[in-house]
Each structure stands twice: as structure tokens, then as C-alpha cells.
Length: 154
Image (cartoon, rainbow, N blue to C red; front, side, top):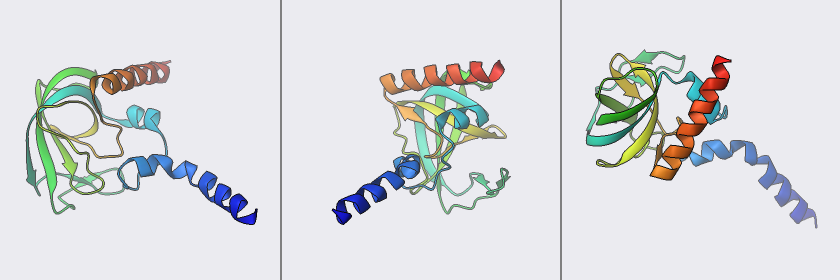
């Protein structure tokens, strides 16, 4: 009996960490998707046209700012922006994401909802931002974002 109670307590105590576990093991903040959407500079739906790995992309400095490359490699993608949900973007935009557990895994030729921060003309994103693929999930997240942003404006 003692083992069952202890196991239940361990499982229930892990629930607050679930959002972090969902981001491929990256230590994401547990503030939730609505907060991430409110704080994002830009959110858009677009198709990934190309991808390369480089070490030139900007990186977060941990204090809300940006610095030179801190990751050995980051993936740099070119997107055809189809719908801007938040912010202003040109038709084609570069997106960077770190490689490794905190990077979001994009595939060339696929459509995505991308949530990110602007660094000059580059959109930086990662596994913690709530990016999505698949038309149903993109539609669901886009509706959620629009509702969240309307609440913010009230």
C-alpha cells in the first residue's frame, strides 16, 4: 500500500513539469502557451522552403536579450510567409532555431505555425515557443492565439 501511495505522489508531483517534457526535454518555462504568444514578437503560418546549419545565428543571452552565437550550430530556414497572425513580416523570412533538444524540428516543404522573437530581420524560435505543424493543429493554435491576443487588448 505504501508503494502505491508513494508512486501516485511522485506521478502527480511531476504534472507541473509536463510542459517542459513536451518540448523534447528542453528546460522550457512553465508559463504556458498563452503567455508565450503574448510575449512573442511575431507569429505566422508559412511554408519552409530551405534549411541550412550554421553558427552565425543570434542566440538568447538568458536575460531577455541577444548575443552572438552561443550554440555551436543552429538551423537557418527560409519561409514563405502565408499568414501573419502577429507582427509585421515580409513575404519571405529567415527563421533560426538551435540544434539539439531545444531546437524545433522543421522539415523543408512543410507548413508550420511559427512563434518567435525578432532579431533584426531574423525570427528566432525554439522548442519552447509552441510552434506547430499539421493543418488541424495550426488551425487550433491560430484560433487560440487570436483569442489570447484579443483578451490582451481588452
